[in-house]
Length: 374
Image 1 (cartoon, one colour):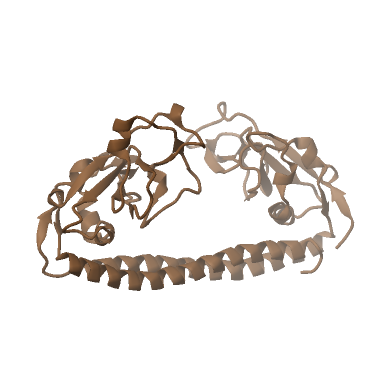
Image 2 (cartoon, rainbow, N blue to C red):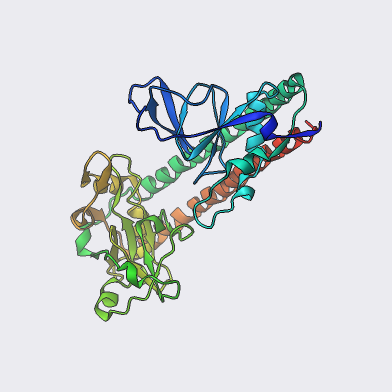
């Protein structure tokens, strides 16, 4: 492309400041942190066309701001000089790996001096404008494809609910839920017993997803050895867990997952378990039934809480009237559901792979742009 120049000679870095003295809900200017808008202000620090790069915390997610703004003390404003097109600088920041400059041992952070030593290619302004236009043309095409993929995922979610709705329609025997199951409330396990060497896994609200458990982000083991606690909260095969807390009115909880072969799961607070009478119930059938539109409508009719947090109590898992076909019919219905949902899962995996490829392609476009190959 061209010779590289250091940031110190082509731009200005504006350090953020505490917003207390300028904060105003009806202020003219947005207040930005490294993660986005945090409020409004009566004054600004950075001009329009500045790129935000996190000083602390989120350091590898640049944000382009096309208006004047106030940046807080955890965010740098990267302000281009006259030789730089603002969007050209932004796209370079999108490509650059700021994590490579992180020297912290705890919270990721960046030093202003290290940023000023970054080198980048600086072609003539007309060439920068051409490159920006080409990047945005290709990104627009990508965005259209990504939007189509996301819509397909939404349609799959609707289809899954339709599968569950249809599966449980029929003239079946009905019983009160507490006639065929025992409700178990979770326990507040003591953090002082948490240990990577612990024998037991504490299943928390964030670990329970629709039809599966997820321990990628929050994986907690405990050295719990109180036999009474273990007797009461150690989960058994076929137990169906359901989350009881989330955002009020948004139905972003009430997820159900069944214990299937795990022998060391302990039930944490704000998660409940239904332990079914397996002489009349095929547990996997109820994993799906509890996730169906009809039961979820019943479940959320018990929702309480303030404007932010919603909670559902144990009554929602004992009082409702539910269908209970003969156990062989439950197995048959479950088999049909899983055959249809497996097709959804396969399609969704393909969509997720395509979304990941789209992000990789985005980085490839930027790499070529700043190598002079676009």
